[in-house]
Length: 481
Image 1 (cartoon, one colour):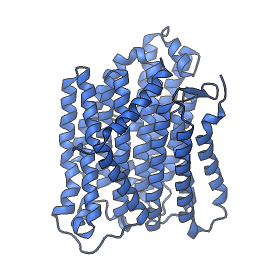
Image 2 (image 1 turned 45 degrees about the horizontal axis):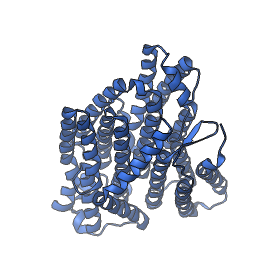
Image 3 (image 1 turned 180 degrees about the vertical axis):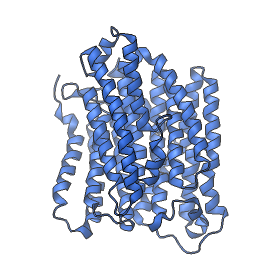
Image 4 (image 1 turned 90 degrees about the vertical axis):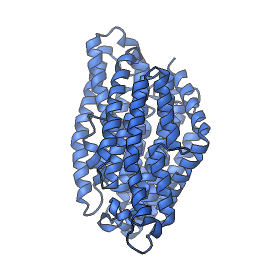
């Protein structure tokens, strides 16, 4: 066992910059904080992406005496997290101009700490490391929700998320404590080796508690109650970051823990994941239909997408991991684009969040209206956009293991989702609204435009995403087998 500190350079860099920002914040005038910290955070995220790329080992390597394991899958997940941070920063710059906060500096370095927690989650190889990194992400998110001046919705959302998140954290801690008690170790490989001799009921109790905690983080039924209020109440850039990063970190961390440690019990927890996934997919789609607030609609949509991803876990391990990684790649871009377009359109008084505010959008801003078509049709899974391939691979994974009826249920949920994904488009193109142009910020518009074009590009060339996902699986399995 070695420290291998060189593998940890990106994390040291992000943590160091975040701490430096805390000190710099004391000396920057309030009127300059948004511009300074948004630019610095953007540069930090871009530099961290390069550092992750240059320090990626294809053959898995351990750091900090086995507490951290670096491989291509961890690096791909970290790059998705950092790209989300980068786009969130672009969108936040314009958003903070419109919605004032006395804590602009705190906002950006808390974003960095949240990204750091997520980066640690996807490379954790030890229970305590996973728990602490999850709490860094969660606590940072609670803070981000409540930082905007006079935004009582955000403060209410932060309180609700904090209370329910504490319950999820307690369940996870108790599950980990049981695992340590029956195995005598917190390292994943040692836990996996010792579980074969552990009493089955106790193992299943631990698995149940851990799965419950992760289902809470991804917003799956029956642990979804926080999601609509949290997404609706949170500042839109925070909802964007939370929606994408929490799912990446939670699902990748779940894969990295469960496949080495609980592979022998995969038949049991795989069927549970399938059932919960199907219920979540249907419930999220049906609950989103009557929503008039687009952020709330996207919250229920995220529940449905989480369900679709979970159904893939019932398939063969390698196929399940491939499908989840591909879907997460697509879902990250779709979430950035969807919440980004809402953030770009939202004005004071939260005008732009409701469907009625989208009336006549095409006449006021043709570009935004056309981008909305790309974004919502990708979320619905319409070809040739990237969202289509993500859902197609889930269906293939289910059919490969003979789960034809669940595949049909996923298709039905996708058809139902067309009902609410078409709503914003109908309002934008087919209903008359106010006259006058839409005021658009450059950085926010750039983020939405780039992510939307990426949905088109990777939809036409899905083999790029597919190849990266396959490389991630090969690298991960080298460290497991």
